[in-house]
Length: 112
Image 1 (cartoon, rainbow, N blue to C red):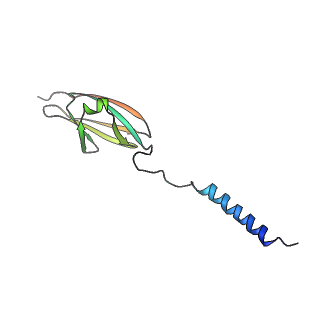
Image 2: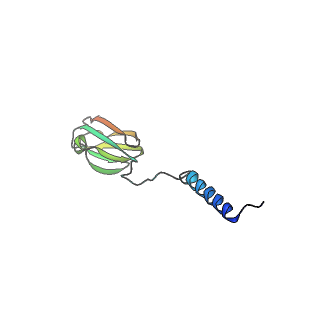
Image 3: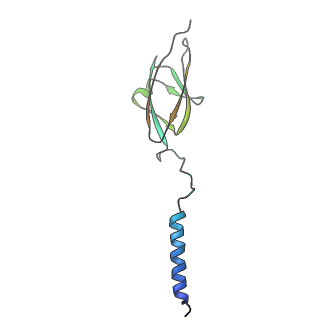
């Protein structure tokens, strides 16, 4: 007895649906847009608090701002640099994971 065309189509449909469910997320990269859980947060406490903060070479503001309002960074390793005229610069490297929170304390030393 040969299977009916309807039975073959039903089985094929179920097989395709099962394949789609199994493979729908495999190998797909996570989204890299901000605001979807791929960022971490950095609280900065610096002396002096008006030192400029650079992240990966880009000025993001003064350190005092980030004592109460954490700096949002994309997941990954970042170079954080602190600069102020009359002080030695400080550079730190920090890894930020998804939804992680870090604190960074820096005391700049006065230059002669």
